[in-house]
Image (cartoon, rainbow, N blue to C red; front, side, top):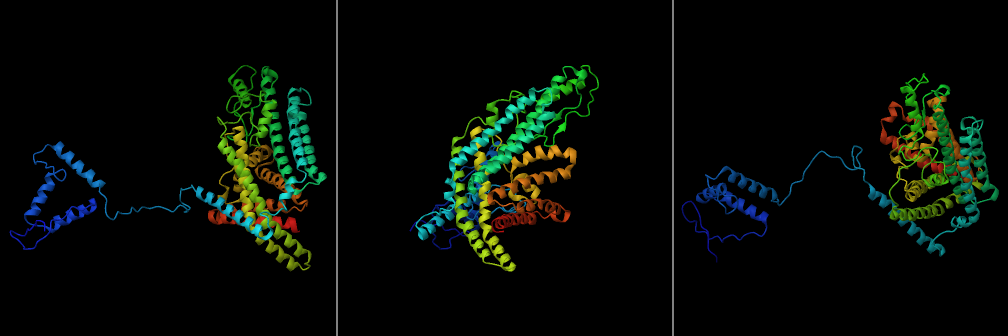
Amino acid sequence: MSSTNIQVNGGHDHILRPRPRKPQHAQVTELVREHSSTSSNGHLEAVEETASGMTSGRSTPIPENAPASTKALSSARKQVRAEQRRRLFPTIEYASRVSHFDPESDYSDFHGFFNLFWIGLAVMGITTMLRNYKDTGYPLRVQIWTLFTVKLWHLAVADFLMVGSTVVSLPLHKLFRNSRGGLTWKKGGVAIQSIYQVVWLSFWISVPFILNWTWTSQVFLLLHTMVLLMKMHSYAFYNGHLSETEKRLHALDEPHSASKAPAYVYPSVEKPMGELAHKDMEVDSDSEDEGLKQLREDLARELTSPIGNVTYPRNLSWSNYIDYLLCPTLCYELEYPRNVSINWTSLIAKIVATFGCIFLLTVISEEFILPVLQESRIRLDHTASMSETLLILSETISWLLFPFMLIFLLVFLVIFEYVLGAFAEITRFADRHFYSDWWNSTDWMEFSREWNVPVYSFLRRHVYATSKPSIGRNMATIITFLISAVGHEIVMACITKKLRGYGFVCQMLQLPIVMLQRTRWVRAHKTANNVLFWCSMIMGLSLICSLYVLV
């Protein structure tokens, strides 16, 4: 047996104790040392207390008369070693915190749920194809897929000609700019451009009906037509404003006969409603005073791009117009912010994601929407009672709720994230703010601002801002909603080849709903309003589809 350590109060307790081995874990060593120091007494306790006060570690003694600097260093070393020790049972720090999903939380990174969303859609697509292969021997149905190839060349040629017909705006504008008579933009240019746009839209909407296209081709051409109509309008009217501004600036070379009215600043991102520059400054004299100089500066500033590299009329070129057609925006500007280079990895990823979304949209339509509508159509044809008809419509709407929720989310992603993002990469367009957090909307007005930023910016700039000074805020809001509702109704009429007005009525009903949601008793309940928004959105899509197809 190893040597013993026998210590009592001045004698021996005749108990043999083995010398303790050095523990392998530093934490156990600390516990043993503390236990030894508390369980021992007498001479050993006094020795330990003396040693602990005179040492900087386990073996380095510090004399009582050591300099203060030495004692400070020793104390610092002991504190550092104490901080580095780990407890056998670490403490848990508690604080006043909220969970990630709490409404008061500032946490906003939920990218993992976005990945989970795509994983779920992939699982749905794979299981659907396996079930189809088991039932029919083919992984996919062919009812919608075959529609993509019907008269495909007709669509390609018509779309090319439709895009090419928009370039008429450029020579027309040059004609208006160079005219000094009745063909200036202010006198006759606005009317000519407006008439051309109405004739142009009517012609290209009627083309799919004349050629008897499928609804898939008709939807593509119609949506592209609507986009180019807004682009053409913005290009013509903004450049028309600049042509009148240029005439005013040149006229001030002879100030005695020129207009001294303040310069009008066209609506922009910084000034969405437009304004009169320095409207409080009076320019009455024909001499070169401060007011005249400021007016010239305001007019010249309006003719220059916000970045400062392009000045009207240097933008009137074919390359500028083609670049504008490719840029993912509906509001024309002299110059846009650009990235340094194209991110090819991001571009390829967005192109692949675009076709992936189209694939999923087709699968969902064929598997979960088209069969429901076909079955309901057959049941309605053999039903005479009103109660049975209402029951079938209610069942159809309920069966379409979840599929249309997925359709809605996929349409949002394919348009605003992938298609617009791909064109932004191609053109190096730097402003990618195509949408905001519309999923947190508490009323329809907020949703209209954040769901489709390009269209909202166009309507605010070319409809609301231009009509508000003449008819007031409330009427300008109604006119803006009216134009948007007419556009949506045209789309639904072309898809279903029925003019029913269901979409128009539903969109116009958003105005009284917004007025109700903005009352003092309702607007404070944000969560309830957001739930109401989502329920009305999902149910509204199913309701409108069922009414257009079945009624």
